[in-house]
Length: 225
Image (cartoon, rainbow, N blue to C red):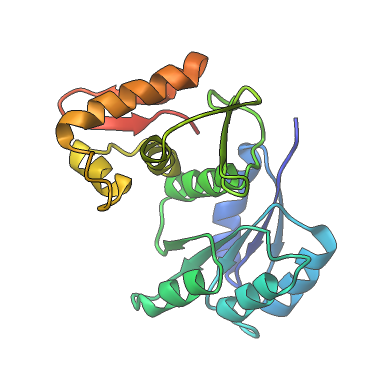
């Protein structure tokens, strides 16, 4: 089993004390940093698999840290989850624009943070290889989906639907939500055809078909980690 390394960057020790134990409990190797400059040094030294990065830091702010990481060829592929306590969406837009992979706003629920971390690692093809979805890998870099190590062919619509579900484990998606996830350009997707697409995805997932759960009277959700 590969243990994934996570670096949590936040100048509030209370936040670190809140976030680190659940990550360790999930099986991650976790280190911390209280400042932007220290964080850059730790990233280059430790090469974590994922960075959780607060926007508000005492020296270099999170935007500058993220920009530095994404401009450096040695670190640009490390996924970054931005954490912002500001109501202003400009931080989110700027962070995503310079290469952040996801964001979460304070105050956040630990379950939501853990779900986002797992989803970002999954999209990067990096997991701890544990749990019911260990045999399913959604590799964005190769634009490939693998089941038990073997690539499987999903149509573009099926890929978009599966990735949308897997990005938010436990969240119930209505059929209307999944139409949106499929993309406005996909005129073949209607509420009546969503069930057909989900059936097809399940068939292709084989022994992992139960990862796509049905919520009676509501829609579908991803049952993995």
